[in-house]
Image (cartoon, rainbow, N blue to C red; front, side):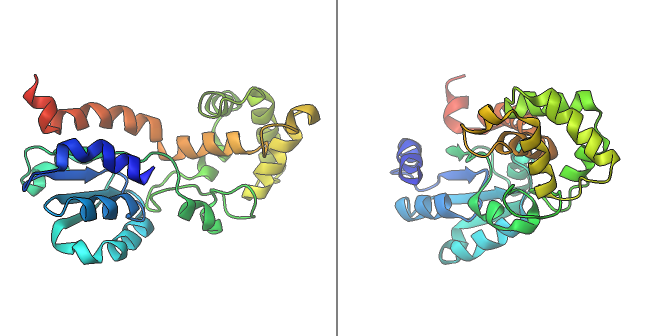
Length: 234
């Protein structure tokens, strides 16, 4: 995937001495490093809402620090970030969507259904809404909607009903509690296929916690507006 991303951005970046590229989800800095190595004249703006990832990318990209600006923000803020930096337009923008292995591997962050952890799932730890906020406060109808729409889970209504029952009984306190509730809500024949039965619900709650699709809807039109080649053809 890294090499494919570099290849797709190459026409906009090669043979240029002034190109700026935005890595809208810089993460651990792998894609950013590959771009900086391949195109020695570009400058890169790396954005991430996850402070832990941003610090790790700072280490990964330390050899390129004169050409890199790292920003703690959501990618819907791209126009404001560029304006503050005095940049009118960029040559390309890379979005690497979803969750990273680093976030899953850190069990205390609550993204994994295989390890007991707090019901968190926040990409930005300073955000006020966590998985617990949603699971403890959403109505059964809203929980079912989230799980059905963002997890494509056909047993969403049953899962939502059992979440409401479990929280009322004080039996929803951790990620493994949630995983067991989901498992118990899905008929045994359906649990035998498609991997861990909790994965769709965990994906749905994570997306809702971080408002991933709503932020993406806001970000994409703004991103198109600041790409130089896009403006050139308008």
